[in-house]
Amino acid sequence: MTKLGAAASIAGALVLAACSGSDKEPDAEQQAALANYVPPFVMSRLDFGGVVERRFRRLDVNNDDKLTRNEVSKRLSPRFDQIDRNKDGAISNEEWSAWMVQRFDAQDINHDGTVTSDERERARELNDADLPTPAEEPSNAAAVGR
Image (cartoon, rainbow, N blue to C red; front, top):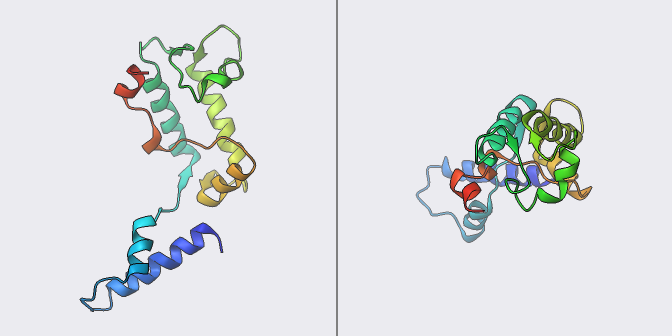
């Protein structure tokens, strides 16, 4: 069973238990399932475009519409030259967007314009870098404090 299927089964059981009219507290197994529940991930290509734009703006600390080596995270630093296609020493919004969307498309296994939890897991298995989610976007404070 996939992680998504297991999570759906657990969630279904918990909803059923909650609707049973019983005031009984969930047992230890149900509470553990609730504590470890991770909702399924689904992101469309259109939604991802917004994430990409916001991430670029947050990384661009000096607001000059380009990312320099000192503005990218340690995680992205080794890929700087790959993203900087024109080799001018800076990553433009267009270069950033093209690189990020290319990564999204590589993880969209069935090419339906949506990346799901299962597709993300498959990409991890293939050692592809994980796509950022909105929750993982750097805050302005984190970007400045690097």
